[in-house]
Amino acid sequence: MTKEEYFEHAVNAFGDDKLDDAIDNYQKALQIDPGYQDALHGLGMALFNRGRVDDAIATAKKLIEIDIEDILAHTSLSMFYQSQGRIEEAEKEGNAARILGWKQELRKDQK
Image (cartoon, rainbow, N blue to C red; front, side, top):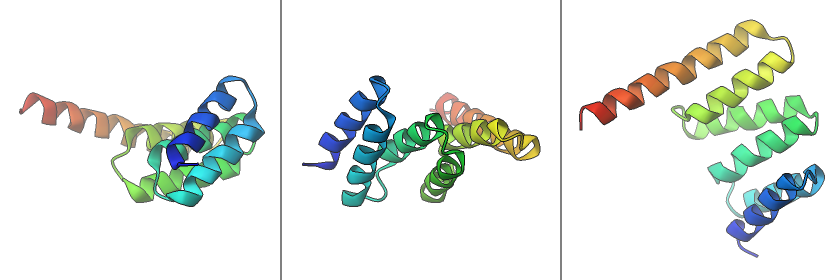
């Protein structure tokens, strides 16, 4: 199967609340393309919803390594930290997401 097919299976499994199946399929997509950002986003949320918060945090950090301006990765990381009571780190990531959003809006306005 292609990474997109694994991704589609993962999304469907996630929607059906079959989190272990979703995680497995996201990971298979990532075996084909370790930098597949959509699969990393999905994997992070599936891990988080499965209660594997430390793994979700690691996944969000990997996304930020790939693209430091990934607003959703910073937002997710903030949410993951908040769930662990790591408020200072959560606020830092939330602020990073807001600043990136503002920069994105400014770039749009300049076009």
